[in-house]
Structure formats: C-alpha cells, structure tokens
Amino acid sequence: MGAAKYHRVLLKLSGEFLAGETGFGIDPDLAEAIAAQIGPLVKMDVQVAIVIGAGNIWRGKIGLEHGMERATADYMGMLATVMNSLALQDALERARVDTRVQSAIEMRAVAEPYIRRRAIRHLEKGRVVIFGAGTGNAYFSTDTAAALRAMEIDAEVLIKATKVDGVYDMDPMKHPEARRFDHLTYIEALNLGVKVMDSTALSLCMDNDLPIIVFKLEPPDSLERVIRGERIGTLVNR
Image (cartoon, rainbow, N blue to C red; front, side):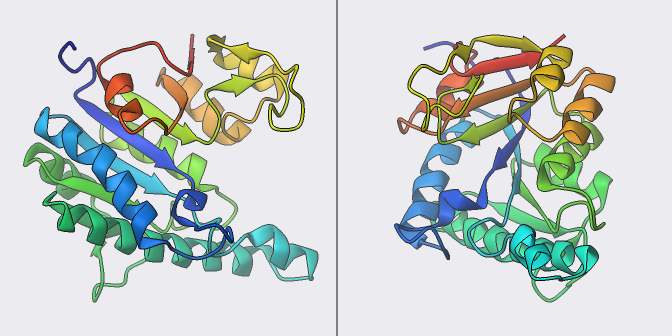
C-alpha cells in the first residue's frame, strides 16, 4: 500500500460508535476498536484530530420533545461529548497513543481548555487531539464543531465515519434500492438534502474549500485506506 495522502486530518465520529447492543452508554470494547484504527495512522506520521458526538448518551431532540429549553438540551449534549472524549482518550492511551482532550467548555480537572495554537502544537508532536464540548455554543451541532475545528487547525480533509458505506439518496437501511454517490459537490449535497452533515457544517466546508469524505468504519483497516487515498465512501468537494 502507498504512503499517506493526507497528513493532517479531522475525524468526525458519532457517539453511537461507542454504544453497545442497547444503543446507549459506552462500551469499552468498542472504544478499543476505534483506537485500533487510529493507532496505525499515528505510526504513519499522520496528525489526527477527532470530534465525537453524544448520541449514545444524550439526544437534545428528546429533551425538546418534553419542553426542555433548547440551550439547556444543547449544553447537556456538549457535556456528554466530553465523557465520550475521555473514554476514547483512555482507549487510545492504553493502545500507547499519546492523546489530549481539549474542551470548549472549561473543566480543567479533566481536560485542557481549547486553545488553537496549543492543539496544533500537540498535533505536531504526534499526539492525537480530541475536541470535546462542540463549539461551546448552543444551537451548533458536533458536525459544525468538526468543520470549524478542521479549518482552525488547517486540516487537509474532514473525514466522517458512518455506519453505511457513503452517501445515499435515501436511507439504505430502509430502502434497498437507494443509490450511493461516489462524489457530490457541496451544492449537490445541500440541494439533495442528503444526510452528510447539517447545512451549517456543509456551508462552512464549502466556503472554505474543505473536502469531506464519508465512509463506513468497517472493515478494521478502512480508516487507513481512506488516509492512503483509496477511493472508498463518498467524496464531497467542489
């Protein structure tokens, strides 16, 4: 296999990747499986930053359905992402991958505050950096946080891991006839309303010409194959 095509990347993970069979909570075995995919990248001298969601712990939509204030629901989700970040950090460090968690909401006892220049320095030293607590602001998703952090650290690509092998015109889990796209422009993705990322995140990537790769986090070497430039999943760019 060839050398790495990308040398600084931001990986966006759904919190659901950490959930067990119940779809809730954190399964240490699954955290270790993710760490096992990330470790080889560090050995290839790829600088890796990560943003992880909170769907395995808290979904703000549930709170809203019960009349919860939107900002409160969003802040609860941000705190849940820090829990996931710490779980992934633990799995990575047990796999001998030096890792730092930076949080957009200060909680110095468990994570560094987010400081852009410090994050870049960690990456340059070969450390994986996990960005927790989203953007630190309500009304913004972890997709948007991923796009924002990717641009702040000058990532070459935003890689979004999913449970399907790319972007489809409809849910392939419900519609076997769904068509998969190998490539989409930002405008096509926005107009089709496909669930690549939310419109704010997509627009941010489009305005700053940041390519997005959407792929399935299986088999175990799938992430490494993306980093080496193999055309798997769906590429979204101009």
